Image 1: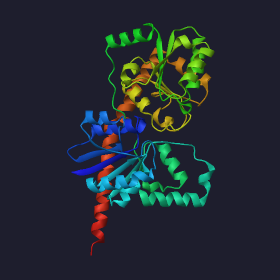
Image 2: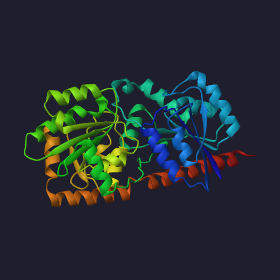
Image 3: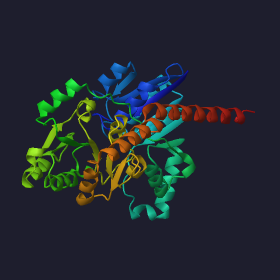
Image 4: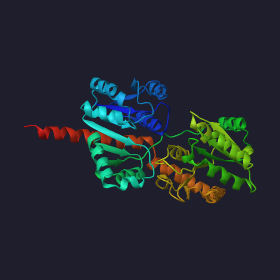
Length: 380
């Protein structure tokens, strides 16, 4: 059995945490002994308990990639657990401790994509990044092709990167009775079309474009409601904007939701408006598991997720007129059915957690075998 330690710095449940939980649920426990190390009192802990996954809590590393004072603590835990593989999710401290503790295989999973500035055009900077990646990791898992592109731009060698697309657990549509009850609770009339977005309420998710597109749609005939699922620092500003542009009666802010299927089962259209940090959106994949067509900005990894005219539509980021047009196209029943089938197939072919997990486990085995073979070849 291969012992794997997954190190994550999340105190709340973000995209990296959801991705890890999805993979752990699909893990082949006959072959892999998975243990998670994470900050004390992380909100991931109850979910790990529910999955029956062992975990270790430490003081430090909370929502920080580098915490110098946590490195000795991580080192001691690693020496005690003695994993064969360490996979670090946004936790440089764990990678440093892993090298110091002599873990045979150290992996970094990179979950984010950011605009790469001119800073990385400098040869010295790129050489430093290349050296750091060699020192602290045996392989970097990029959760989207755009992430791999970013890493290469920064100086990482392409052969040190493996792209494994985020995969979501399939959602199960709520019953008709539950859907009716939720619509009633939210004040959504039975015949109204629901356009939804599931994302943190932060500027990089561009809910403002979503609301301005909603304003354009509300000018036409037809009954629409716009469901914003999530919480974040921009909530009050977005609520104020919905009032200012006169559509507050059509917009519903749900706040944070632990059971996303409850609200996504209401969606006719699943929207992603990101203008920053988007890789391979779990919310898009989850919607596709229900056969919900996606409309997404052309930013980051979205063009890989949404094949225009196949499982949804893309629109130019920040363009509310084009977003509104794409949403209205889905009033065509035949087109809607075609895109719905395409969404379901896209999920089943690639964007599911089972496929992601098998590819990750295959990489684990390959890297460990390579390290063992290398050590054998070094023996006299």
